[in-house]
Length: 203
Image (cartoon, rainbow, N blue to C red):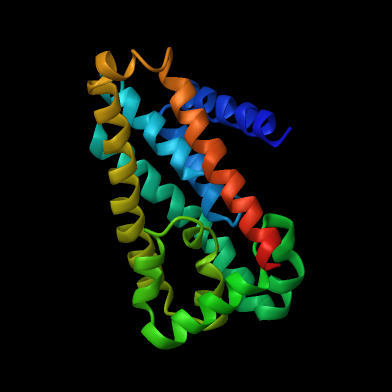
């Protein structure tokens, strides 16, 4: 059942990007960065595949993804700043953010400082909720936006590059997979199943 739901979500993601182009990437990555588990591991590789097909530019795809991350992270930052840890704990479970996730973020922020925002943007799962502790700590907004943008740009570029390279080698991979879409959906299923199980294990 979960796999079917994820497949539907993945198909929707690809439809949004195909229809809206770069604006679709901004929208989807904003949703992902607003603490909603919409996997960038599906969004950006598919955009990279469109780069391979000549429909998009790799650098503009990464730029759109990074802009979306900033847009989505700002509301999450203010939730942390205005509501604090109690609000994050109360509503985090609805977007699969456990108390252990929040504890990890708090400790990482306390130990490594503001640079964890930059690093966290390049870590699967962590990047979804890392804006919360920045808000709770009332991190300087200018630094928050810069670290979020730069870290997200690197992450988006790498995923899009991977999708582009998969497209370039499709003649070889095509022997094992009939359509590129199935590869993306499969990767998304694996990631989200792991993410959901991780949440319930640590909640």
